[in-house]
Image 1 (cartoon, rainbow, N blue to C red):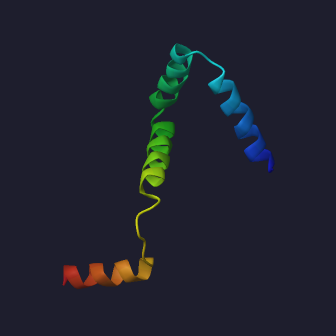
Image 2: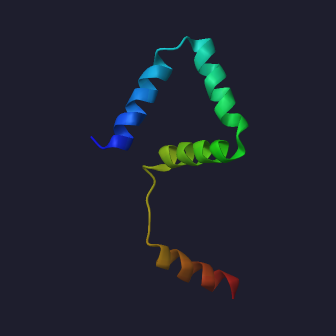
Length: 69
């Protein structure tokens, strides 16, 4: 396990050990920071959409170019 993953595991365990009210307070504080809120939302969207089909970026750009002409 990498150091980053190890540290993340420690923080997750600490968060899980809190009461529900305490967890909600910590998460609310995280969401107050605009940059952290954006990161959290990005990660949530990635998690939700991970099973969707994907395609190469170059294919998307080619299709987009055809639509804008």
